[in-house]
Amino acid sequence: MDMFIIKNDGNSRKIIDLGDGIRIGEREFTIISGPCAVENEEQIELAAEALSSMGIKILRGGAFKPRTSPYTFQGLGLEGLRLLKNAGKRHNMKVISEVMDPRDLEASYDYVDIFQIGSRNMQNYTLLKEVGKFNKPVLLKRGMAATIEEWVMAAEYIASEGNDKIILCERGIRTFEEYTRNTLDLTVVPIIKELTNLPIIVDPSHGTGRKELIRPLTRASVAIGADGVMIEAHPNPCEALSDGKQSLNFEEMRAVLSDIEAIKNCMDNLNS
Image 1: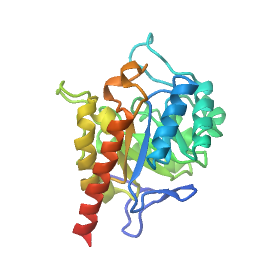
Image 2: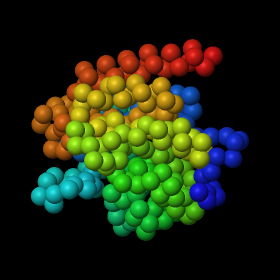
Image 3: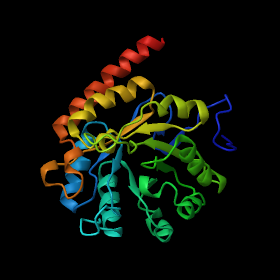
């Protein structure tokens, strides 16, 4: 596998500095959380208020939604980004949201702290090259049927344009198994750390599509050495316009955070 910019040269890991003491890729386990989609001002405000009170510093929320059906909720677009940014600002949170079209990058730039490239656009090379020209961190999700090499080369497309502030996100791959939405491939965490110098986080929400599996797979993500997780949380998952079945309510999110601390303490003791 030929890699030129993001390869692991054995010297140091890439740290993504978002400012305000928020750094992805260091010892601190990063938690990104929020609803799948920004639905309205009240919903994203409730989410930001609750999650920030738990110590979560990065708020997610989709404004441009690539949905399987063209007749389902497609997001609020730039208005959704404005609501997301305002909620994050009120609660001292950084924000992340997906961009789908190179034409939206400049308009989105001032609203987000991290550009997200979703699974369906992992090999949208025009988008990858354009986002690589911006001086802003990029979270690159693994494609639903992508090999590790294809995923790493997609990251190299971004880095080759000058932006190596890349976070990789494992979000499950498509297999013959139908019980879960995807098959979460946690083996990629140590593999990515061996091949590249980039931080890698895990998305157990999309990785399973089942909220009851988020908690155990978050524990596993901490134990295997991931740099963080991205978890969907909603004020009322039963009423969510997108991905309610894989979203936690805030009480469930608190239980997951408790697990993260417990596993982190175990790992720190093991490595000391």
